[in-house]
Amino acid sequence: MPPRNSRSHKFLPYLAFILFSAIFVFKVDIIISQTISGAARRNNLESTSSSAIVVGNGTFHRHFLVAWGEGRARMLEDGELLTLSLDKSSGSGFESKKVFLFAKIDMQIKLVPGNAAGTVTTYYLSSEGDHHDEIDFEFLGNSSGNPYTLHTNVFSQGKGEREQQFFLWFDPTQDFHTYSILWNPKTIVFYVDNIPIREFKNAEKLGVPFPKDQPMRIFSSLWNADDWATQGGRVKTNWALAPFTASYRNFSADGCIWSYRTRSTSCNSNDFLTKPVLTMELDQRSRGRMKRLQRELMIYDYCKDKWRFPNGPGPECEIN
Ligand SMILES: *[C@@H]1O[C@H](CO)[C@@H](O)[C@H](O)[C@H]1NC(C)=O
Ligand SMILES: *[C@@H]1O[C@H](CO)[C@@H](O)[C@H](O)[C@H]1NC(C)=O
Ligand SMILES: *[C@@H]1O[C@H](CO)[C@@H](O)[C@H](O)[C@H]1NC(C)=O
Image 1 (cartoon, rainbow, N blue to C red):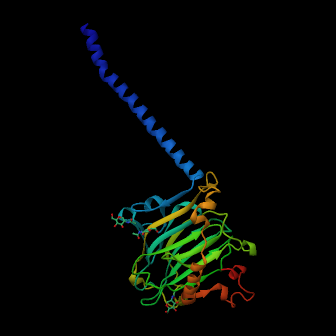
Image 2 (image 1 turned 90 degrees about the horizontal axis):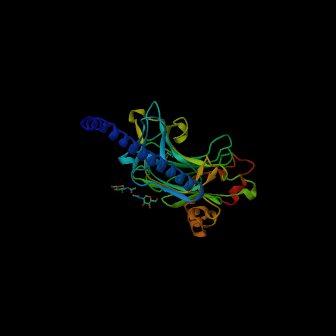
Image 3 (image 1 turned 45 degrees about the vertical axis):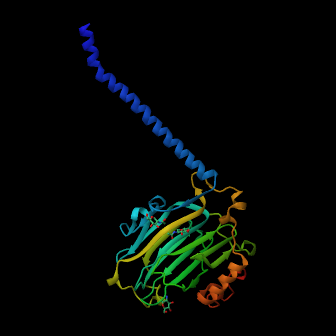
């Protein structure tokens, strides 16, 4: 008896170890399978039901990547604030992890203050490849006391040359303001603080390609373009003032997320009949307000540029 007893005592640690290992493996197995089914659920969600992403506090990290200018693009305040900076050796930029096929995107931006001559801050949607689509906001900096220029453009299937430029009715460097793009199969609308400033309607009936087949990612950058940006390139960047910084917060997107893996979007055909961002167009009142604002603040309109387009502007100019 005593020998046997002592033997089983000797085995006790091994037994405990085996038991512990078994439990450990079982537990890990559960965790792994939960992760896999979670991922499957998420993927499923991406491909079958409509989804929106809203970025609140601490989520810039989740939805954006620093694309270039390492160290000059920073996510701060637990991911609530993002800043881009520009110095003599480089600018910086970020991009969304997700790709959209129709969405309304909103971002609050505070532009480079003071003498921002030569700097350009961009915020845009773009697809990839040769015949790309693109919807652009660009903010052309100016010398102190002179107004920024808000430059907009729409590319469809690689063709742009649809610039419209505006002065803003506020100083965009004093505080954050909301810049939004609505992009659905019927129209593209640019908004500033929820006020429409430009519309580019689907004019396929007039033979103008409309961005509707290529998914687009959100990009933003701060870079130097003092060879052309400020007063036609006459005013150069004052590098003694570098680094120049623009700030971003409170991003939100409501729309259809494209999956390259399944080659499908998170929206279904019913969403295109019922989801406001996918069906929305400007009503008469908003369009009237936009036209009045354009008469006051638009400083360049490609539709009226007879020098560049002697044969007349694109047919879309008739309906926008
Ligand atoms: C800068 O200010 C000048 C003078 O007001 C103006 O003509 C110009 O359009 C402004 N914007 C840029 C980007 O040069
Ligand atoms: C953040 O954005 C949302 C939607 O665009 C808006 O309703 C909300 O007021 C914004 N929050 C702040 C703090 O500006
Ligand atoms: C994030 O939280 C802070 C305080 O915790 C609050 O002041 C701020 O308005 C919040 N921002 C957004 C976008 O909700």
